[in-house]
Length: 193
Image (tube, rainbow, N blue to C red; front, side, top):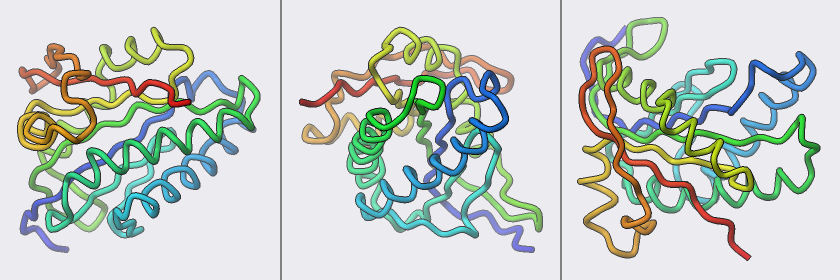
């Protein structure tokens, strides 16, 4: 057990409408989630380590060591994930279509023997469940992905880099839930030809 906090980026991918699916579709979607997620990580040059991953049934939490460039996560991973989800949608019937809420944040976490703990990780999980993110994805039936980032991530990763995913395409929303009273930023990537 290592109780010394270390800095990580948090990537949380959560399947939209998972609980409304049949058990068979849920089982299939979980396998597809890992395939799409791992393929996207590999193509974006973001490391995937099973020991830095937590399975949540309808979602997966990935901790990326702080030494890895956040730009690869905020730009390359988002683009690759959107592409892989588009490919997946072309091969899937509507009941098995996978659309994701992707939350990005960074901070300190420690390992407690059962998994990872820390306020910053809790914040990342709250981002993935943000009602505004759910609403943004529901409002765009042709989209496969909504990206929700913390205000800190937006200020330190998205806004300063003009060639990154268009920072002007992000919309600021209130992020008030449980112990958090802040703002988050939401972006729904548009389909590419």
